[in-house]
Image 1: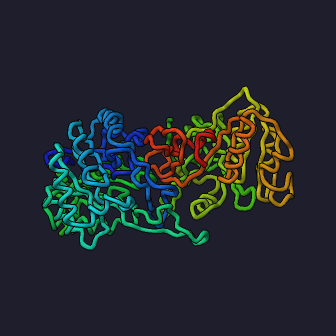
Image 2: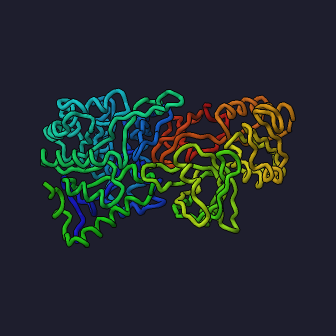
Image 3: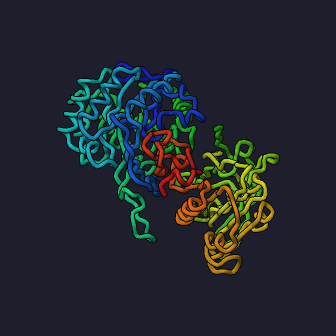
Length: 300
Length: 254
């Protein structure tokens, strides 16, 4: 049985990684999960300089999901390179570094610095709904998305994944734009913009008013978008959005995802990533699937 | 360190005041590693409720491998928890957070307000004859246990027991002496404690609350503003779940 997948020439032992922002740089969950069991660890977004993030409350529970408006608090690329990459290099796993920024120059600065490190891929976050400037603006305008992809590609020595926002009218337009810009892969979906109001206090629950909805509540939307993008572009897809177990992961793979990411589910079960790896193997064994590629995108 | 995520057996659960429940669970690894002031994540079995409930540890029995949680029903999750009875299982993770530092050579004053009172019990049991100031809205709970663990001063908002008012009113009335303060309670109380400690020139260790998601320091949901650069991001935003929940009052912006 072969669970390994390849994206832009990078081999992964299995199709399971983590969704950026839910797993930090792996250290906190390494107490529970052997990171070497995962296909890759995708780190929280890192910018050119430290970001403070948003005021609190930053998180709120919703029915079958949660809202977050962390605002990409991060220590900046220099601390990240010095501290987090060496930590992850201790493990036999691939490293995908999520990059955030406010301007094209911000992204390029991070990408240039990462290019000289021993990481495997970069995921460019042009879809965070919680920061006002940059970020999401690139992710909702096709020409800007194409331009930032092309710019990042000029400097990146590793393959580039563009992370897409679901907060658009037609996600295939955005997928085509980043592929035109030279994206090696796409990841989707980022969170869906939402809001929660406390009816007793008559105010927003999140300090940022809006936040990104994640968790099982968004899974059907994510599966639909992965399916649409899989049928619109010819680059590999990393699928995510509410995956809590191997059954959910298989759904994404059947819809067209080459890899899957576990996000919010880590918060309710820290072993989810490893359990999804095992569960995919069981599904393949039970269904006599020799190679994971035999099921990627076969539901048409 | 050394956190575990396990199914814990419920040994007993009882209601000890309106909406306040006392729960004993068997969780050997958690009990072995737990310290006063730490908390555990409690997971519900309702799939519509995604996030764990962070609940402070009220008592630790290392010999028996058990933990006591005293919590207030605040929403659907704690409501679910309150329905469990002995023999049921509940998923928990912990111990989480830093806990209170045990300073044995200074006279301690422990100040708890409302549902901030329970963590003071285990702390008091680990100190020598501390002063305990417990502030209740109206109904009293944990009184017998607290009396055994230290010199108890009580305030109630309706004045039915102890000083009428809040914990600061009780301190003003009874004038207990202390060289170090430990406090847990509503933000307005912690702000008053911080001011009081500064006036007295003594250190106050305060336990903060914030909305949490992961509980292990990964999501950066539960930060508080700090005077010094924080250990994780270096932006004066420490994680309440990891660098906290206990902070030196002077070092946080509350």
